[in-house]
Amino acid sequence: MTGFKLSLGCIFTILAPSVLSFSLNHPISHVPRPSSALFDVAQNVETVKPELDIIDSGASSNTDTLTTETSSRVSIKRPAIHWTVPGFKVGWQDENGDWFDEDGPRNGPPQNYWRQMSDEREYNRDMESANMALAQYDIDETVANLEKRRSIRRPSLHRKMLGRWAPILMSGDRVAFNDKPTDNESNIEVPYTIEISRTNGRKYGPKNYYGIFDLKISVGEELTVKVVSGGDHDVTIHESTTFADDANEPVLLGTLNDNKSLYLGGITYLTDYIMIQRDPDGKIDLWVRADESYLGVKDSSVAIGEIKVE
Image (cartoon, rainbow, N blue to C red; front, side, top):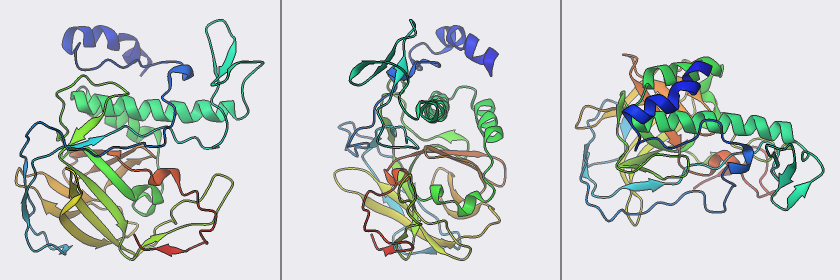
């Protein structure tokens, strides 16, 4: 990938100067800082009407009407970095070797600086890959390189699968809107989001030094998958249930009217920020995190294994 990074600017100057404007190796001082409102869901003033027709595939569905038209976009702010060790000021070093944090100059690197650097590298890698998918540039190689980097033993049971996702690619095709320049600070606009949750309510694992997070999914647990449209209010346009297993085989939950299939399973890459799935034909789904669940919960009163119905 080193050679690729060195020539990327030249290639994009010729092929897509208005599409990608991100820097591959920006210093930590340029990293977006976490904000209190990580995601906004808003109705875009432009009229877009992607008709969504879910065809029953045998999975349990709680919807009577399977044909729904949406006329709004879901505008998603990109996820902020999940700092493994929260609560410490983010530091960086300038080209002269001087150290800084949000308060100004300092005598050296802040505590947990090397952990912060690792967190930043993972975040940058995932966001750059999302930009590639949005630009429809070198998708196969980008995804293949991600899949080589991380292997979760049982991704279909991993807690990071839970939460709300914004689909960029479905069945190998881009479904996100891409009528604005793409960079690491622009919003991602999609026709709907996909929510994966425990049917019987959220469960939390034991509290540790880094916080409280969702409990690992168990074999046989019932999961609910919702397709949610945007606008002023969330509207569930399709809902299916399935049961978790450790086989990680793609399960067809429905088919869109443009032949885009909604699968759960076949997960080949999963982090705080991105989930990649491959269908039985090897076609790629690439989804970007669209909620705050990956940050855990701050309520110290939450008990181990507690169920919270949401």
